[in-house]
Image (tube, rainbow over all chains, first blue to last red; front, side, top):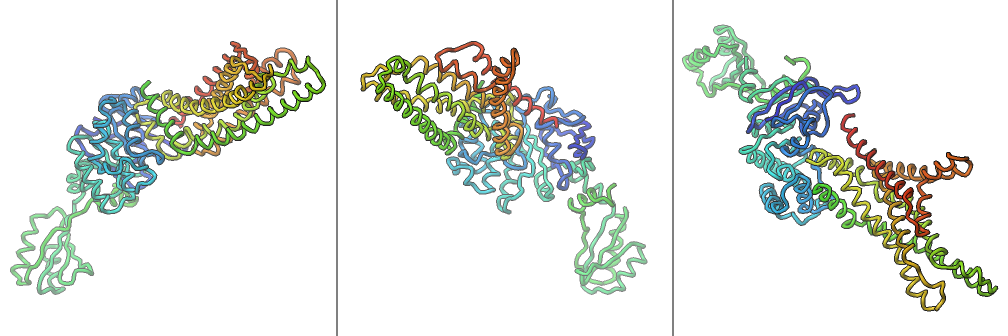
Length: 310
Length: 265
């Protein structure tokens, strides 16, 4: 659906993105992840035809963004970082204007406005001036604008920024709802958002792509070292030492763990059973025995922090 | 065409549903009304003098068209130089500031459609201003004919050509104004640049006074304010029409180029 090859873009001397390539299949919902200033917005602006790259190709539904921009623009709904709304217009007038420039048939415009207003929860504010709406409602109007005309692809640039927790939840639910029938790219630096809504991630850092795959795969691949945490009724430093020596593994006791400890295994998952058996047989009164999973946040930090970049 | 209409309608609404257009019309009526009052009272004083001295041959020259309406139109033309940048300054600059520019540039519309839709909306404001000017001859013909003086009557045809001329002049100012607006996201800079451009195109004609031969003609021809003169005499000349349409096309073309080229920078 979307194919991007070797995109590079400089602003004056500053490199915004370099050699960015990825593809998005029909029906995918992709999280575009990166710290601020990583080049997320630049990439999106190129895909939506807002500006051209210095080199590289972007294709949407088979159309080159710069050879047939109108064909591409017809197929994309785009919510930029700031909702592109006119303060002096009412919500209805604004949506009508967007519907018109998107080339929606005049007979269908009202039905279409009704539909998007309903799914974005803005039916009640249609008659109000956009200037008088709260940030959350403006954002929803922005989303409504993006999905007007039922485009095949929807691109959201940081859709939940500046919203309160309830609004964030609503917007995410809305995006998930949309994901059932559309191809979606969602840029953000808020990780739970990606974990909640996306199946795939593309991680971009300093203008380069550092990872692109399914979230599960990414987590699994990064989790080479599995860490386990153990809690027992009758804890003693002796137990830790015994385990360390017997199984020749690293153990540690984090301060928040009073009657337990952590240990690390390096690709030795078969030993978990032995360790558990050892603790149970020793009569320490096993309470808890669980793996510490690496969160997307850890992976993200690892991928986008200089020292550890792989 | 549909896209141009959609953009025109949006701009038209913003002009006429916010105070912008009404403030412009209010100030314009005030100042043009003051022009009218001054010019007309001068006309009255002169007529009275000629009557006292029984200067019949002078009185023959005293008609409302030549002595009141023509100077009024020419003065308003200068006033347009100041008013029109205010009308056009927000057209593109404000889209950039509000970030709605991204919506326009990622919608399936061409740059020309955006420019034309916006330009036509600014013309609608100018049209209303030209219509406001016609209130004054209407007043004259209503009250002026009562005196039974031959000087009290108005000839409408030269006024019509003056109106067309004034509208074309305004339209060419607006074309340069929208270009200035496309250069920046600040409305103030946009207004200052268009003042500068318009004044430059006005004073370029002054240089013709010192020039000779073909250069004199060229400089005169380039001046923005020279071309209304013939219209106010009731004459529509090809060279004036060509001039106004060239300026309009030039302004809109530059606007389109400036918008397209910004994407490459």
